[in-house]
Image (cartoon, rainbow, N blue to C red; front, side, top):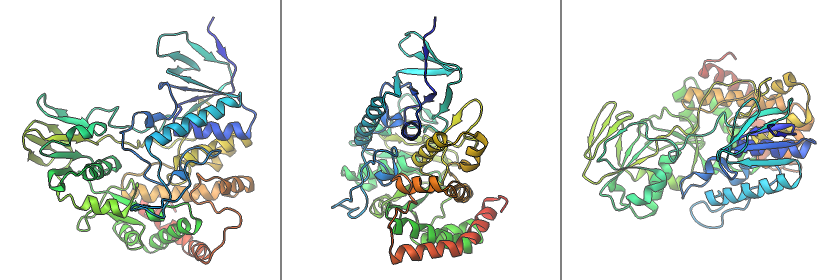
Length: 456
């Protein structure tokens, strides 16, 4: 007989989204949960991340609702005065503690080193005995938007036998190479270049293959301080309300101090929009050998073939693979469906808050149609039109769930919520931001809908 787990929920994935959901669910409902993951330990992709990785945004925006990650201001360095950003090691330790707390409630179990093969069947990776969840157990898919990272994905280009191609996690092996070629346009590539420069690499030894230039958010305005974050929202609404084209929108956002680009002479077309410090921007600009010939097709020992041309490189060149598409963009689907609860972002970005919100709504409401009306999902961005759509959908979703008094009270108490305004918060700057949001918001949403090609 196959053993049966008597639990109310089976959560597939013990990464950031799955654990944020379970944390809220367990704290607000008398539910029992089994969490299954192919990795032995919790933390999802953080278990495989490159050694020098750290959050690109404030730590308090990440993790689970019950337990704040970080929260202190940096006292020194180039980000003095900004919220601290956790390292990979700190995040892994944090999730170990989160799971220990959940297990300690007696209502959550972690099944590491196993996979869900469908229909509530769980198969251990070591060939051990299969188990099942009981009939009626609700499946929660916490892996729908799992990131793809270089450590787990082969390069998306051909590699000759005599070429030297390394994933970003092995970048230190390339420090003695005559040239380091970083391939990729996103956060991993920018991290790799900053790391090389921090390790003393001459910027003239670095070549950056950047198929598309990215827009990035200034980290200084994506902070947990309500006046700062609401001020950024107000500046975004002002820019959107007046923008006539996507070029115009992002130029206005740049002028307002919200967006940044690496090369002022190039108009970026990529808008995944991670946060970046201005000190990092200065380092990135010191790398002048930038290749804009499209995506890499193949790498040889002395030549790199790209979509729009070839580049010769010296013998011994190390090519650093940062080209995995970290944030997938599958179709938006209803979060609540008969076959599964599928975790997705609800507001613009900030997936941990979205998963925690879904957990809270699942714990406090019974009707799936009503839950879906409160939490329509957004998607990750890629193009500028995607970003406009994500921002618009996030605003619509926020209006839906914040119309419920208990959800608003919960959201304002949760550090994961970047837009929270805790009780008692007051300042002239916050009042000014709120007035600007109210004034420009309606027209901004109409303009974003037009720019994204959506119905107003």
